[in-house]
Image (cartoon, rainbow, N blue to C red; front, side):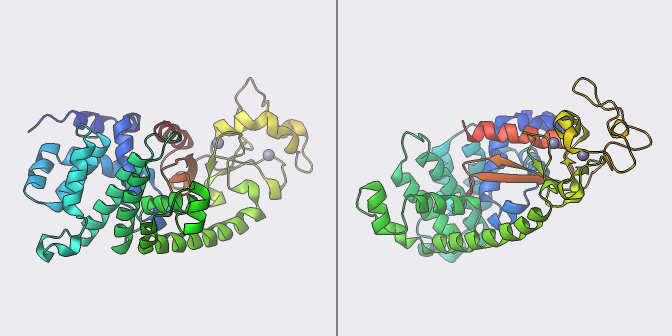
Length: 364
Ligand SMILES: [Zn+2]
Ligand SMILES: [Zn+2]
């Protein structure tokens, strides 16, 4: 057995894993390239991805993957490339990763004999990982410099993934970047960039089609969710300023049981947030009919934590396990510049920790 240092850490302390930046990069790359965007955008169960990543890294040694890749096993080449790109489970080696990926997703796959081609899903994922790798190369020196040749390569592989019917977030992100640059029309391109249009951008029809379809879907989803939220805007996000925890179902959050009106009822992700927000919220939290202000405010102030009033808990239903909570993360590598992660099992503090960790990697 080769020494596998990560094993003991992974098995004994799950909570440490997202403090490991390479594990985070590994999970992030897989979220960008291995999951269809339609599933990733509205339901990204971070714990699930995390658990799978730990299992994958600890379940198969890099030496064994290498042996498989050397023997021509496509899926081993793909998985090894992900490790080499992220430095998770293996030393970082971008060139080595690109070479492995091109074996799985060759530039001209139709010229290969069918039996030498990777299974469709593996080839599609190799294309999306290639797209992400080239996108990272293209934007390495942003905002100072964008490598347009690398960007076009990213688009080529994004288009190949889409042609195989697979549209993970990276495909949409590359399309969005190019659309922003005006790559969909010669006139726009020349007006914005002041250089002659590269007509090869027009060839990425599968990528553009997937992009248009997803934009339409997202608009419809936003509209539906927007209607629901517009009715009771305070019911879907934690009222504490700066917290950022949201929920698609209002039952996932805790309701203030004070006298604030139902239409603008304050909701919280946790008792801690309610306590922190009490000073701000108190004026809006008028007593219910027949009650005095004193019974609504059982000694809550900035210095003391609220003593739960046994007769009337400050917050209804303290335990909300199994309810889905979300947090929005600024992540420039996602198509919308944002990544929503959600979990039914993680507490608000853990979600905020992940937000901070992902933002640290993505924005660095
Ligand atoms: Zn909160
Ligand atoms: Zn209230």
